[in-house]
Image (cartoon, rainbow, N blue to C red; front, side, top):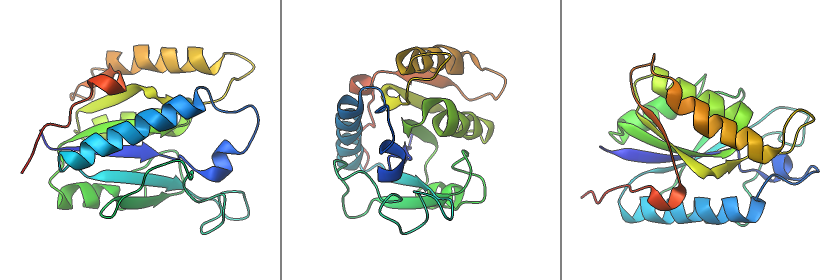
Amino acid sequence: MKPALIIVDMQVGLFGEEPEPFERPQVISRINGLASRARAAGAPVVFVQHERPDTTVAHGSVGWGLLPELQIAPGDLFVRKTTPDAFLRTDLTDLLTEHEVDSLVICGFATEFCVDTTVRRAAALGYPVMLASDAHTTRDKAHATAARIREHHNATLPEIASFGPRIQAVPSADVSFGMRR
């Protein structure tokens, strides 16, 4: 397998609201660990950034920027998106093809929106997906805590078999990118 790490919407403007996303510091640390291991293995690291004009995530604004705690390295890739789907009307598929990627590790924000949609779309496009089960997050909602939302998605996304490719929910410490030359 030739994996890539897809980091979804870890942006200043999305994390600035209250309540703070569930396990914020731990999730950021886990994402940094995933990115470090991906780079060491030669796997592309792709930061996806949501944007919407006249909001806290307007392109180029402070809020559109990535969280300062994230470790970004030369050679990392960046994708701009305007919907919860990181593939829709973006160059993500072209980037993955260019780098000969055939599987994805996905993490980021928000579990029930952009992470969920991107995982489903990736599988629909034929990519086996590892959802880093402890490296995606959201906020508490009126109907469920963020912990329950994450737990729900970690349990249900791997149950989707109709796309063909497998979706797995794997703790970030257990994700291996394999050594590639």
